[in-house]
Amino acid sequence: MDTQFKKGALEIAILSLLQRKDYYGYELVQMVSRTIKISEGTLYPLLLRLKKEGCLKTYLKESREGPSRKYYKLTAKGKEKTKQMKNEWHIFVKKMKQILEK
Image (cartoon, rainbow, N blue to C red; front, side, top):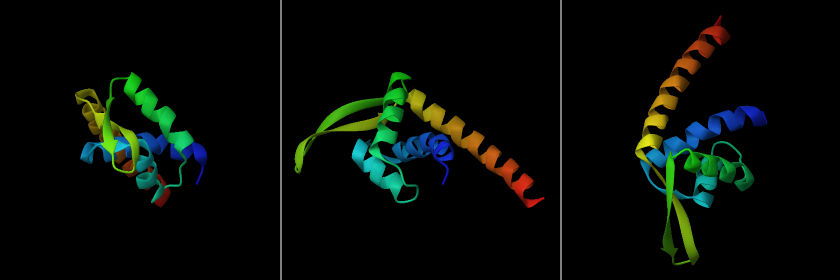
């Protein structure tokens, strides 16, 4: 799959996962990688940007398997952005389907 195409879809994938529950970074990489192959180096800059935009907040949580983990949580702004992006995505897919099937 084309790298640019993946990067464009990754933001909505991450926001959608975080809409369900809070995740730590590596856990997000694992979740997305089940469907789309990504690396940690692709994910962390996106998480940082979303945090700077006010869409995410972070908190530390102790882990039984080592040091505390940084979890990512959607803010109200992040929830609104997720809703908007999902709506735009569905419109885009519908229009692309029309083009591809003609």
